[in-house]
Amino acid sequence: MSEHAMSEIPNKNASGLDGGENTDVCDLHAAVLRERPDPVEGREPLNLWMVVFVAALLFWAGTYLTHYSGGFRADEFSERQINPLPPPLEVGASNDDPAAKAAKEGMAVFLAQCSPCHQADGNGVSGQFPPLAGSEWVLAEGPNRIIRIVLNGLSGPIQVKGSDYNAVMNGFRDSMDDKQIANVLTYIRNSWGNKAGLVTPAEVAAIRASTKDRTEAWIPADLLKLPVSGGDAPAAASAGAGLTPEALKEALKKLPPDDLKALLQGLGN
Image (tube, rainbow, N blue to C red; front, side, top):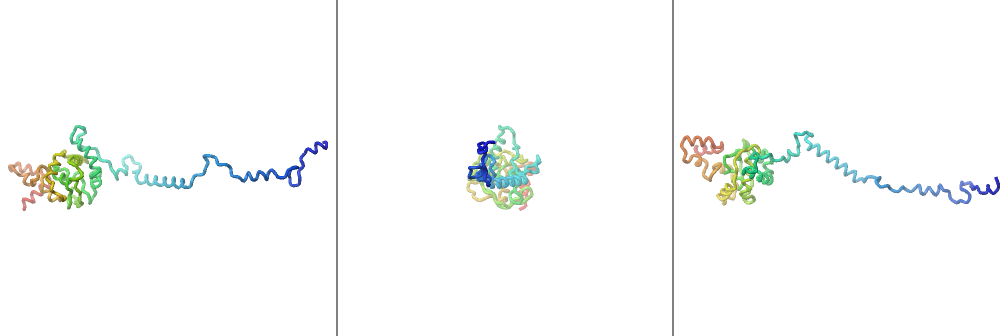
């Protein structure tokens, strides 16, 4: 090899640098290697608060399903046990039926005004609010007494289906018109197995007018003195006026148990 060729080969000094260089390339790259790589979109770490939120959401979902899944059975949904849907109306199915139309409108009034106490299923609250389903007060031949209860309210002990209740019911004379009261009573008298007659706005208007000066709530004892239908004549008098003994006997058989009891007590006195 010629001297010229040998002179073209870089010379390295004792530190490992090529001839003519002042800095090692590895030292130059070391600073670059210490730098963090640029972030790549989609690979950012999850925010800690997001992790906590998702964990809390999963915990709530598990708790909700535990309480309201009803065991995942098709025949039970516990949430509906708390707020049950009202049953289908048991009056005529046709929209042309006056009772069906009135009850359908009365259902909305009932859910808004009455269901908080008497419950959407009409069973009331044991020891507090009497049931409407199967109630002898609701199923009376006429609405003479229950119209008065809705208009002015009720206070004092009352017996319904063999159980005693003593809660106070507020009146709706000033907050509900005749049609609303008639419709809600028609709904009550024809739901949850109840089968009774239609209540008309005219009946409500007549009783509203005859009791316009009354401000206090009714007590059951006073209501029992009134007939279940018709005017304000005492039940005993209206049941026996103008009747033969045989007709009177048949009329007494048709009286509700409470009316018959009141009548017999009155005769005994």
